[in-house]
Amino acid sequence: MPTTDGPLLSVRDLVVRFRTHDGTVHAVNGVSFDVAEGETLGLVGESGCGKSVTNLAVMRLLPKPAGHIEGGEIRFEGIDLTKASEAQMRDLRGSDIAMIFQDPMTSLNPVLTIEEQMVETIRAHRPVGQKEARDRAIELLRMVGIPNPELRLRSFPHHFSGGMRQRVMIAMALALEPKLLIADEPTTALDVTIQAQVLELLQRLTTERGTAVILITHDLGVVAGMASRINVMYAGFVAETASTPVLFAEPRHPYTVGLLHSMPRLDSPEGEPLIPIEGTPPDLRRAPVGCPFAPRCAWRLPRCWEANPSLQPLVGGEPIVTTGPGVTHRIACWNPPTADEARIGRPLREGFVPAPPPGAAGTGAAASGTGGDVVVFAAGGDGQDGGTAAAGHSPEPAAPGRRS
Image (cartoon, rainbow, N blue to C red; front, side):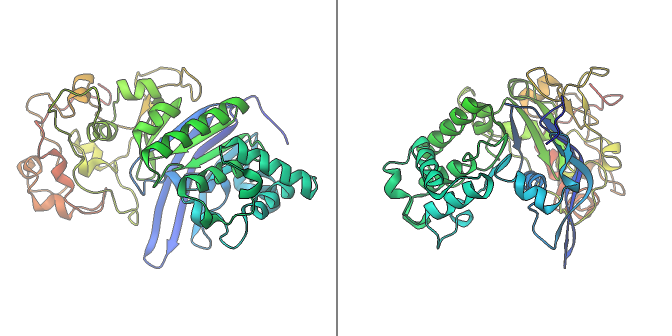
C-alpha cells in the first residue's frame, strides 16, 4: 500500500446524503480533518450532528441504498477510499482500519460463539490456521481483562454483560493491530465504573501499539481525558477545532460555549446555574442556509442568517496546523464570543440585540424570545422556537468585522 509523509487519514470536504421517502437528509456538509499516527481525535456534538455518519463513510459502511458519499475525498495512507473498490475496502476493514460500534449486542452475531466470530475475523485477513487463530483470540480476551478466556470463547454474546461484550468488541477491533481505530460511543449504556475500565483499557492498548484513534462521543468528560484534540460538530459541519486543553480553556464558538455551560463541573462555584442551549437542532432534511446554529445563538448577526462561515484560524493570518500538539485553533463563526463572554456563557456587550431572521417584524420579538416570526423561520434550522436562545441573555453590541 502506498504511503505518504502526511497524516494517516485525511478527510476533505466530505458530503454525505441520505435519499429517503421523506426527502434528502443533509447529514454531512463538507467536513474536513486530519488524523496523524498515534493521535487521538475526539468528535463531539449533539445526537444527529453527523459524528457517526462521518466515520461510517470512512469505513464505507453507509446504509444502502439510502446513504451516499456525494462529495469530497477520504485519503488513508494516500489512497482515496471514496474511489476504492469493495474488495480493497474488505482488505482494509479490520486489518488497517477497525471500528468499535455503539451497541456491541447488535454488532455481535447472536447465533455464533465468540470463538467463531473472532477466529473468522483473524483468518479473513491473516494466513493462519484454526489453532493459531484461536490462540490469538484467547490472548486478546486475556489482554482486555476477560477471565478464563479459554472457556469464555465458547460463550454466546448474550452470556456476557454489557461491559464484557464491549471488551469483546475491543478485542476484535484490535485483533489485527489496525493503524486506525474508530470508537463510536464505546461506553454508551455502561455504568460509570465499567466506563472508566473500558476507557482505561482502550487508552492503554492503543498507546502501547501507537494506534490512531477517532473517539466519537457526546460526553465532553470522556474526550477531556482521552483525546489530544477535539472537533465540535453541529448539523453536519465542524464548528470548532482545537487541542483538548485549549478547547476547554478557551472555547470561542457559541455552540461550544453552550455545551460547556450546560454540563456540571467540579470546579464551578457552588450554586452556579447551568445554562442550557435553548431551541432544538435543525431539521437536516432542509438544505443548510446561513449558519445552522443561528436560530439558537445569542451572538448572531444579520449575516449569520445568510452565509455559513468557513472554518478559519482564530487569529487571522496564523498558519494552519491540522494535527499534533500545536494544532491551530479554528472556528466557523462570524461573531465569536470574547474570552469573558465565553467564561460567563452569555453576551456582555451593552446594547446588542441578536439579529432577528429575515422578514421578522422587529428586534424586540427576537430579544424576548416570544416572537412568532422566529418560530416559523426555517431556512437555517428546523422552524422550532429558534429565537429563544437569546431570551435569557443580556445582549451584546455587534462587533465590526468577522473576528473579535
